[in-house]
Image (cartoon, rainbow, N blue to C red; front, top):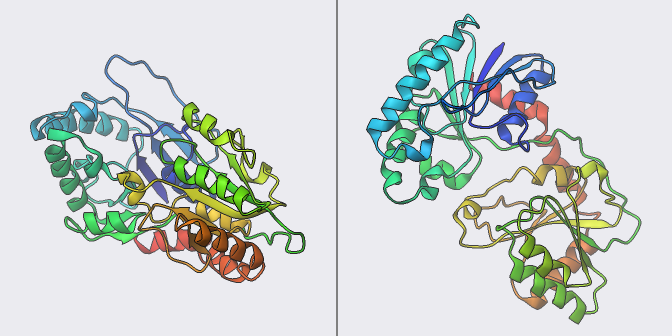
Length: 357
């Protein structure tokens, strides 16, 4: 089969669900036509290559940046321009009615006008509506509603988003998956490291990290905290590294990190941040679980509930007790972790996706 992806994302950006989905289909032998972030009229662009089998990259132009479409008239005007751009590109591909259209944009309400006979699947994994400012909310809501209602299937990665989007259309949950099979960690040696793996940015609950680091010292604990990931906020680093039991290292793939002493994956996010509060199941969870690491979180009130997920920031004594419990029961937690990883591997998610076709 052939799948057309419409995104506002470059192929070279840090992998997101759209990249993961494209690779999942390509690895299964399907052809993927991946439309990247549109260029403006004055920008030049050549042909890009994904460097991967079965994935071809294309671009087209947009008339107005989405933040400039401050009313429905401008949305319609830009849609007419983009629609003609896409139609001209489609002449190269000889669209077949069995081709599937996968849309990751809230404002592509015109796609069904182009692909009337094709299955159109829209995947929303960002809270566009709540993050919109001022007068832009109304036209954004209009575009989002039309996009969802013109789609044959709507998928999202968050329970909160599902509840919001269900006001406009029927919505199904579609979680990320693991491309890595479960690998049992060393269950013999004593472990003492807590790992954060991901972007170091505004989402991090710096007060919690500082309090936890002090708390570990006060309780004479040998636990230490390791941060590995791209640094997007230098001011956070200085606040983190002032504690002797906290270390920060540059970004690295999980398979290149020594996990022999790690017993826990930590996601210490702030409360009251909209794009944090809607999180149900972030991409980093399954890779961590696939290496046998339970998960501890702060913030994220809608986070997945599971036997291997623990909530911290509940008070000094409670947090220390939770960490000690996880450390002591690390081996026993592996049964539920492995079952979850096996139930959410790439084969299972591909089967789920094809059920929507």
